[in-house]
Image (cartoon, rainbow, N blue to C red; front, top):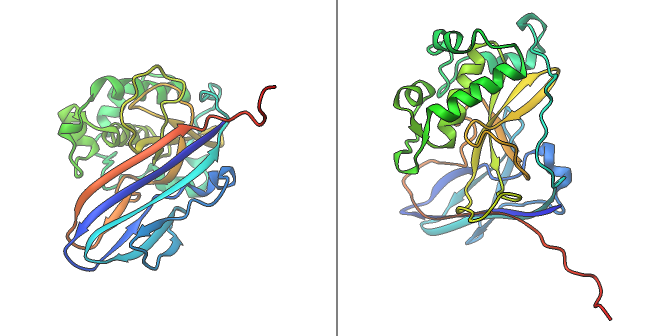
Length: 276
């Protein structure tokens, strides 16, 4: 399957404003792109790219005063099938974990796994280790939080989401990440595209989404506590400890969001020849 992906963001800036944009497909999916998904801007400005400490691709630039628009556009190849989990993946003992996964056992800005540890063990300590325990966490978070765009808050933490029982996809992910870390399962926060391909219409307007990856059985596995169901066309942009590590934009000054669009849709192939 070929999927058309991309985004466009517009801001109004009162002055020259430096910013960092993290909107490119993750390097783990770069070979699936039919062409590089370069960040472009209007008006054009110099863009410097680099990798952060987690390996995510970042772009730094200085926006001029006034309306400034930037984004990406690409076609990516995908299996076109619903995700299939590995039910046999085992949970490692902490002493057996690779050193580069240990960071994802620790509390972070939005995932206070230390503050939620007693609740995590009370709720899930009786569940089987590994995949069943992670799925129990996702089931609980999916049912515990009510999705509500109107109640979104960029500073809400996992513990606050647990108490308030309301939020958006990042809140679902933060709470599940915190619970899993408290249960000694390395877990990282992920952001990217999730399509509605294969689901019944009507489809809602597209947006970027948040989910998580857990380290079990020697590799990372994706889990989505917000949707809590397999999807077609999950495409990673970035991963880190929590949303503070992987913001779509980090703006160093005042600015007003004036427009935001995301697209992820199947490319319908045209017949290569006319029927006689």
